Amino acid sequence: MEPRRDGDAIVDLLDVILRDGVILQADVIISVAEVPLVGLQLRAALAGMDTMTRYGLLTDWDEETRTRAVADEDAPPTRIE
Image 1 (cartoon, helix red, strand yellow):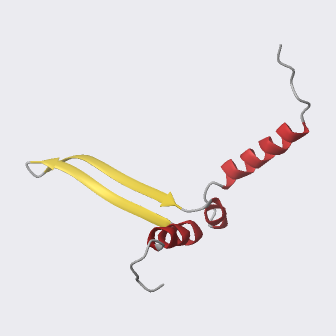
Image 2: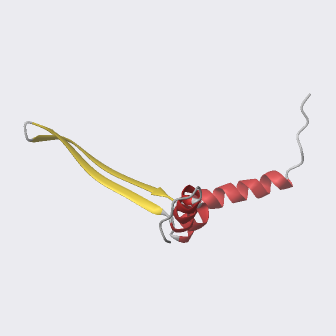
Image 3: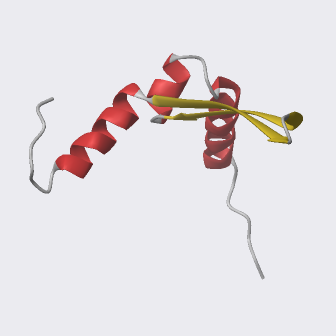
């Protein structure tokens, strides 16, 4: 992908992120007077559901959601009075 200056840059960026995914990882140590007090290990994955499930992330959630959606379609409509 070549850099360019037009309005489609954001759309191209979102397309790449959703298609390929991005993983952000940070290790943070908060210390006072060189004494470590708090350690944080942060990890975030951002991608489209297709990409996430292809890499084995959120597969249980996706399967449960699809199963529930099929069950909701098959269930008779409820009558509200």
